[in-house]
Length: 380
Ligand SMILES: NC(=O)c1ccc[n+]([C@@H]2O[C@H](COP(=O)([O-])OP(=O)(O)OC[C@H]3O[C@@H](n4cnc5c(N)ncnc54)[C@H](O)[C@@H]3O)[C@@H](O)[C@H]2O)c1
Image (cartoon, rainbow, N blue to C red; front, top):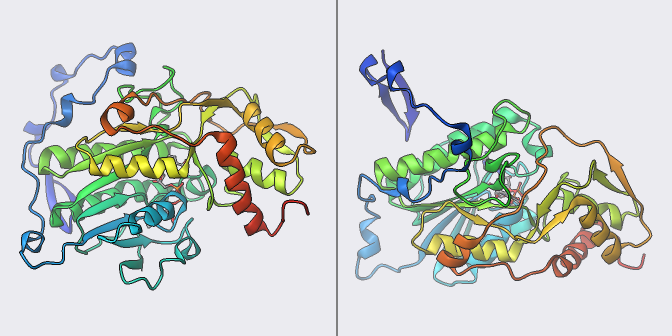
């Protein structure tokens, strides 16, 4: 039997004979408890191939050695802050590709026309042929409202989009960083979550296009690393907040802030005791850059371990932004995880990274940005 898959513009034979199929007697018996807690990190990192060579120009004596960096999804919330950070270094040239599904040119307006900056309207589910040295692969809607809007497209973005970016990394010898997510832990059975936890994810739920999509994206990253020697980096991002988040995108921090500014009740999904940890976007960007520049493939959790219940978050927003608003309960959405908190020991030890911005300091910065965009000044 021949099974073909289209990768890097080529048809590759996946399986050529039934000899490659596992025999029933080979099936590994799994202890589900062990499966939930056993680690994969480290043991699977060995590559079987040396990394592909970068362009010969990189080592040429008279070449202007600017680092060319691709940011997919760079017109989005985290991506645009990452671009700001990368553009600070005069040795960087930054190329953004984005299909503007949830991102906006507005987020990049300060760079449009800059000689070291280039913006390309492109969908990562289509192959991309450009010359770059590093790829930050962020393209994917992150808010449930958007990723559930067209789940088939979401999973295509995660799977085909990541394949295309890995194909590009292979062709040009670039290092690639994937922004994975704490959602790979699903509704976790261990708390807090470290990188060795394999997760508890519903494969057929309404959120699976995102959770399982990112899990496959991580698998593809490691397979390209082991099989083709690609230099990979995987960040498992926990909830991040800050200016430029989409207003009304359904994510809890943006919801509460927009509601408080508009003088509407803060809607806490029942029971309100579910927890999340919130990382300010400048801390997140710092973690991503350190991961890219360091020597560790990851996956590495990047998030703020400060844990808040949804009710506590609502109370914080009320106190800081609008003490007059009411807090009300609404029905929860399916498969909403009950708790999330990163263990960041690896990030601390391997990247020398830990978050520095407290929630009470980050929320007012986001309020300022939301007020500007909503046109509602502080004492209106
Ligand atoms: N913000 C968070 O709390 C969080 C948490 C975990 C993981 N992440 C991950 O970080 C990354 C960025 O998240 P964000 O919060 O900035 O989200 P965002 O929605 O603001 O940004 C995503 C960007 O990707 C673009 N995009 C989507 N599909 C695309 C496609 N097929 N082709 C090209 N561009 C496409 C969007 O237009 C947008 O500009 C995502 O990969 C997300 O999964 C974010």
